[in-house]
Image: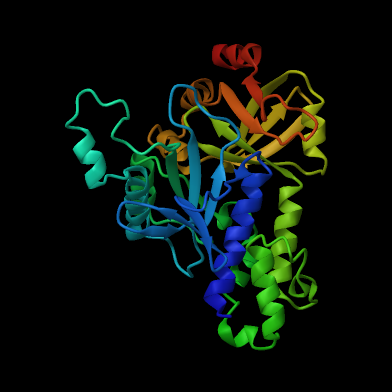
Length: 341
């Protein structure tokens, strides 16, 4: 078992679990358009079948459009993710979404204007969004290309400590030689979500880099909520205590105030109902908008009003079949007050 394979599977596991905790669900292969082979999930496109690293259904679907699915390409490279990787993701998205079955038989049927059967394959169609997840950051060119083509990005550096991310790159082939092949195979199956392997010994090894990475992630996921702005920007909202989800689920209405400090302009604080505090890093795209306006105070107020008027908090509630999120509205009285001042 190579180090590259373990690192890739480890990154996939983290991204998959992160999204499952937000209400996403696994896609069940149909055996034809999406199928399993050698423990991998493949999805058919125009040119070929593609390995789908993390393939999920979103918590909600938009009416009057094809149902959507999300596929994250996971890149555990020991360097920043550049423009070619994001271009490949765009090409993958086009290849999957433009895939259609056209045979000679179907083409011949189009010539018959009295035909009863349509000359298209009778199947459920989806719109596939493709994102890129990585351990490292993205280059400026890659980030701009992704934003302009609406490709979602996730970097572990955005929410895990730097020393934990560094341990990803310590998982070399030489390091893995100290473990048995059986342990490595069990680990790989566990990270791939194989139900036959409920746990893997290497996760609990005292000096295991893998255990350190996963334990750090488990600690993070107990104290984080993913928020989504109406602009499509993603927020990782951190709390200093556990049981954050239960606390928010108990609230019928959520009003928020947004604050920042001049010592660290890209780190903001949300105060919910004047009692719950969550911290988050401002998405880079919004930081750039604010920087273009010299980090002006009035510009910050306009950003709050325009981009943060409503935040969708994805909170998985196993006892409620209603919406898989709660809506966080900006405190209008507070916003009017700071605008006047």
